[in-house]
Image 1 (cartoon, helix red, strand yellow):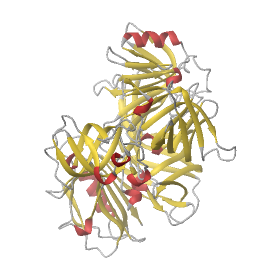
Image 2: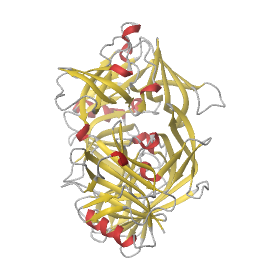
Image 3: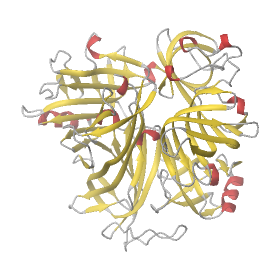
Image 4: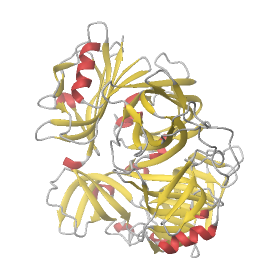
Length: 620
């Protein structure tokens, strides 16, 4: 159950320019800072944002090569949108949207997409007992995976229409939880992959968006700047251009120096064309313009001119922070996931940023999510993905907001005690809290984890109820309390996932009720397999122990995406009734349902699972 007990999502947004000509319009990679390749001649041009999203299990890394992403027009023409193979670690982009590429494509209606993945050099790591372990990807027959084409077809009433004027939006969901089964009994661990894509014309979830790439130009009067897109940690190739909008409240960090508003934009302009940038913000719904809330540039961007370690502090001894399962991004040779231990040494001259404020090296405590900037070296040349050391004594550490999950035990005004389950998705057992307290007796205790909640409203919490709090661990050696919470998500509002599997042959009768307004799983079906649960944060509910099978229903409003998967092909639907009708036509006696995964929210009082997204895997 542990391997699918958590979930999140990433989004990699792909920006496509539509034109009247044919083909992708992408030529050879021009020199950095030069003008993008000219688009084919057209009279009407528009922009469409295509997203690729994923729901995360207990994967610490899930790195594969994305070879191509092709769109199919209604007239049968196929357009390639990627200028180069892109290596993506899906597990590292939970709760983050990445603008992926900008390509020139013909305008018109698009009905399908094909994502080509190459697992040949995949780097997959799962968590087993709090420790990172390697995993090997195989198909349903147990064969090692190589190049895999994953297809998705849109329903007839919701084609992607690219037209001049206002940008369109398209997202592709590569759902790790729904498409991967983990077996920890083998060495290495085995991940059985059934690739599937969920397509949507809207963002299903709200999360931060990121635009990364070298600077092209700055317009201080307009409050904007333009970048050549270079997503993830790529060091070369140009994926098109995007304009980033800033305002008086936009924060900047450029080569380690903070700025706000116009002063930051001026400093960015002074840094010059070619400076690496990474902007975080939101997309305006009406215009699909990207608005930056924060911008980093130069050596403030991981791996740009300085080595970076990104991960979670699992213990601290003096000035040495131990990070396990970290992403290391070295200036000279790029990013990699380290399954071993990374020891980060800090000192009095280490500059520390906590959110938007400066902090002290002593503020970094156990559980904290960090980015450390300095010099990273492997412990041995033969262990490039194992143990590492980072010298940040003359560098910097950025402290990020950190989520904790647990069960409420006791609450008073301004204070909450938890049975701690996990921190940023890692089980509490993975952490060594020695030294976190003012004395040994006051070190953080996962069984009684004390949280300062300030003015947060705790009235909805009851004892034993799961909750999620986001904030910062108390400075090292200063507990109690153990954690300073800035926001809280209680059980009714927490994201939920329902997962059901059947035997290897599936079932031809998975539902006791199958209506356009709701589905009910048959919990008396004799073919039910090992997965039959709803997870809500740290709580896992066995479906078979519930008084009745939950009603699976669509939300009253907002974006949705539902998919039916058969032999590598996905058919995606926006409307729940259309999805139910497709299931009904497929489950005609010759086809069986083998897996069913729902993402949304769960109301235990009404026993209703509100489904924002569903993946149904069928077998003939």
